[in-house]
Length: 563
Image (cartoon, rainbow, N blue to C red; front, top):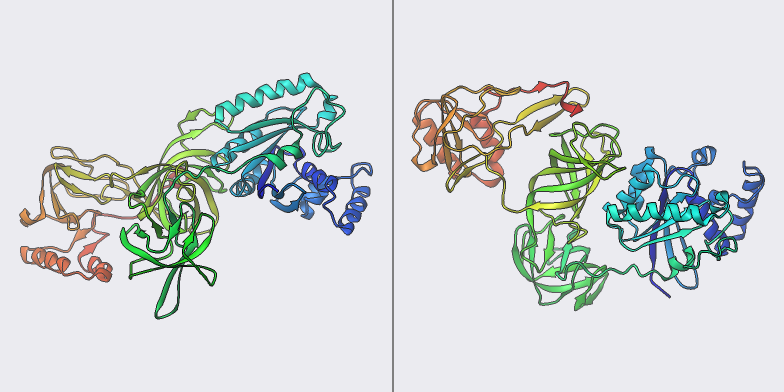
C-alpha cells in the first residue's frame, strides 16, 4: 500500500468540490449503512429531483445545505485497497478564502475544480496561487461538469490550454488535467464511456498512485522546541517534532538563537529511550549540560541557521480590517510567538494577471509582499529551504483574529539598518518614527516613516506628527556607546560615547525620549547606573531617566488605519 495522501479540493463556488468527494466515498463503498440510507433520504427531499446529492456527505452545516455551498472546511478520512487518504473539502466563495487557506496548509496535493462551462475564473487563479504559496507541489485540475457540455473534447482542450498557461505563470509543479463529471461519475472512480478521446489516468487511479514524497530540502537536523519538560529536579528535556535531519546520542547541537552548544545525552520517544531519531518523530531530548532553551527556540546541528529580526514575506491578508502599516501584530513562526509590525508593502500581486503593482491599501483576500520587523531575534529561513522555519501567521493582538498567513521569501541577516552611521560607529532606535493612536480599538502603533541611514552632514527632521525636537541637541545611544551631535537640524558629528562631553544642550536617547540630565554630574551618574544595570532592571532605569512626553506625543490620524 502507498503512504497516506493528504489532499484538498478547491475552486470556485458550485464547481462541484463536495459532489466529487462524495461520489468517491459512495462509489468506493466507504459509507456505513446508516450513512447511505440518510444520504438517499436527504437527496429525495432535496432540490435535485430525487437524484443522489453526493455533496450532502460533506456539506454538514445547516447553512451550507440551505445555500448549497461549502462554508467550513470538511475533513474526511478514508482508505482504499491501495492507499489511505485525508481530504479537506474547502469553500469556494471568496468570502471564505481564509478557510480554504487553512485547508491548503496541511495538504500535499490540491484538486482544483474548473467548471467546463465557465472555464478558468479569478477564484480558480486565487486558489491556485494560494496552494502554491502554501508549498503544495502536486496539482490535479479536474475539469468538471463535462456532461453539461456534451463531453466535448474541443471544450476540454480549450480549458486545458488555459490551465497550462496558468500553471506556467505560477510555476506549478506536477500538474495533471483530467476531464470529469462529479455528478455522473465520469473519470472519477471509473473510466468514462462518454469520453473515449481521453486515455490517461482517471482521478482515483492518479490519487492512489501519485508519489508525493519530497526530497528533504535540508540535510541539517533541526527541531523547533514545543515544550520544556521538567517532571523532576534532575530531568530537563526539550520536546518537539523533528522537522529535518536526524539526531543521535552524543551529537553536538546548538540552541538557537543563542548559539549555546551541548551534546545529546538522551533521546526519548514517549517513554522509550532510543539512540537515534528521524524526521516526523515527536521526541524529548535531554542535553549533557544546562543551556538556555525555551519554547520557540530551535535545536539544530547547523550553527549557521539564519537568526534575524527582519524578514520579507508573501502573505495572504485574511482580516476584515485592512492591513495597517506600523500596527503591532503577533507573528507565529515555527513554535515561536513574537510581536512584530509590517513596516512596508513592497508590492501587491494581482490575482488575475500575477502582475506586481503598488499598494496603497490591502484588503481581505489580497496577496502582498511585505517587510516585517520583529521585536527580537528569532530563527527563520526561506520557505523554499526550510518549510517549518519559513511559514508564518499574523494574529491581531486585540481581536485575536488570524489576520494573515504566508511564507518567508527573504531573511535579513546583515543586522538592523542603523539610523546613524559614521564609519564603524552605528546607532539604532526609532527617533524619527511616528506614534499613532487607533480610536477604534485603543491601540498604539509605531509607523516607520524614515528608513534611511543618516551620516555626518545630513539634515534630520525635527518636526513630525508626533515629535517636535529642538534644532540643537545631542543623542546618546548607551547600548551602542555612540553619541550624535545635532546642530541646526544637521548632524555635526558622531563620536564614541567615551569621548562625549556634556555641553548643556538637551540630551535625547535613540528613541526620542528626553533624558533627565541637567548637568555633567547628572550625565556621569546616568552612565554609571547604566554600566551597573541588572538585566531585569532596564524598565525601571528608563522610567527614572527618560521622559516620553517632553518632545514626543501620541496623535490620532484618520488615515493611519486606512493605509
